[in-house]
Length: 129
Image 1 (cartoon, one colour):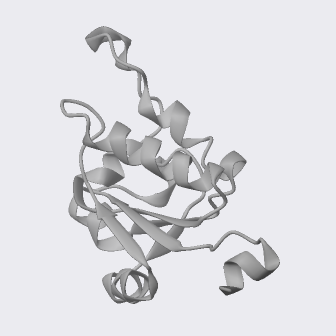
Image 2 (tube, helix red, strand yellow):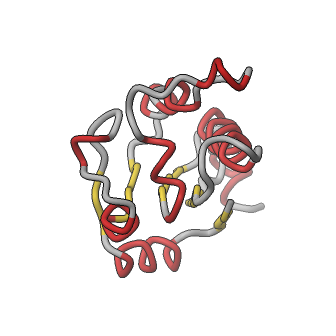
């Protein structure tokens, strides 16, 4: 009998989502968010990393109504409500785009690439969108 069957506890996986697409124009950023929320609903350990153009998703005061789209930033505020607490933003990506932490919607963990690499290595599964 497996450990899972013996104690009826679901097996938790560490899943990292890397969101590296700008918030509009393609569905990658929305898809990444939906997948992360779905995993969190099933009580998996979810890490969410904003890298490259993905940091634009976190810029405050966005309004996507002009392009008949949902403002992604509003949905990102729900990550913690779903139990996704390890939300990381690549510092180099911010700097390369002349953004600072004060430009973002909330307070996120600013990290360097070596920490992101370590997070990826520790994860059971990684989605890179």
